[in-house]
Length: 176
Image (cartoon, rainbow, N blue to C red):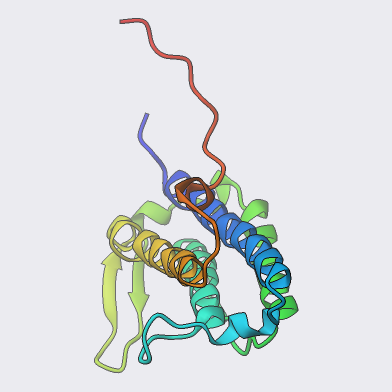
């Protein structure tokens, strides 16, 4: 049975955003234990020319929710102006609720849709599968990875299991 665009996107996006929620929980505890102000999270960067921590989270949200909207032929309004941890958490909660409400039926016809991304250099056109595999999934993973890396750089005791998040249930092996 072929994999659908719903299966390629929604469960993976939910997992990535769930990982960010988990990492935020760990970061809050870490900062609190060290007597640091959690508002310092907002400005974390790996390099001076890189977007800060909260923008990385907003970008993960936008790429996940935006991709599912585009695949369904719907507009998406980008998340902007997240300046406090409660705002970031609320945006993550809204995104996870929106993704959780989606069903495979919502993606009917998505495979045949052309995804058009506006750009100052001219619009980019992608077949839906190319968009998912080459932009949507890698972008969500990139921003999730940056969130993880920023927190590791701040001394959080997190590892690969924290980054991978909840793994899918084991499937019984097929008889040989």
